[in-house]
Image 1: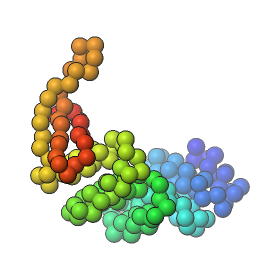
Image 2: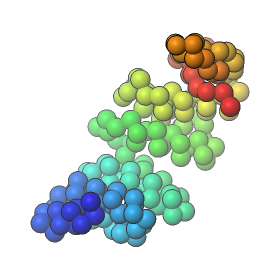
Image 3: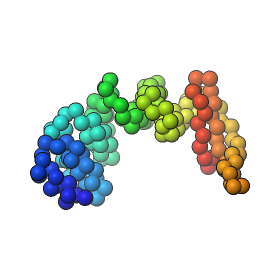
Length: 168
């Protein structure tokens, strides 16, 4: 994939999506410097490419460059952004930094974009549980064909719905 995408970027260097995909391919082959360069080139080609900001921010976070990553990710907090994963990432960053109200805000924005997002429901549930805002009940769910699984159910007046997940 790397060779093919390098060829694509040579043929059409202004194609931001090819640079983003090259960054992903290089990251998967552990070429982190090459991935960073590809994401940077994607942003040079089209500064409105939100996936380039997201991927570069994730890479910088992986490399321990938290502040740079957060500044890049903040760019994705735009009115026209319809990608719930941008808001999940912003929520995670704020949660990890102890800014729980901001994290909750971003998780809810992710849910506004995708009400069925298991990741957003789980993140919001974990956040509320950590803040002592949810009650945890353990129950056994019948999954059919005689299979059962213990699950944790979380419920609270502030929280919209239940969050289900396996119990360790």
